[in-house]
Image 1 (cartoon, rainbow, N blue to C red):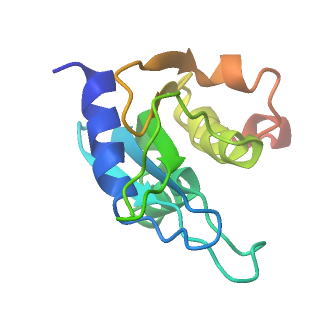
Image 2: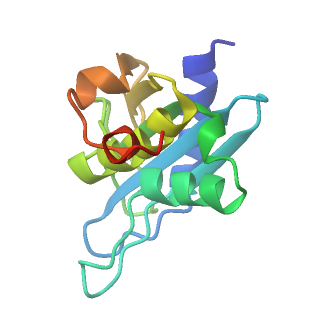
Length: 148
């Protein structure tokens, strides 16, 4: 199985745990670390909306809590509208929002990698392949503060 397909499949599994009662849009993310381990996340909405967390942010924060932010190699992201049973649907690839791109960039700059970003729809077979630098060119990050 390819790296992209494996991460997308794990992201789909994670999306089943999305808490998205307001938008009804479930998102799952799976982050590949340098040692081959994978950390997943799902979006978590909040009634105050502004306190909601994207799946990518949940996954990257979990990686950071494990002290492994510099180990991020790739991330797979899926998303789609939830049906009556709470399953994500849709075939068009979903890409990380701007905030999530910036969060992924933090790990990318610290790791010195142009992180692979694999995007798919909840049910779609098409996987769009990117490098973070394509999704967030000229990003501001740790290197600009002399940290990376």
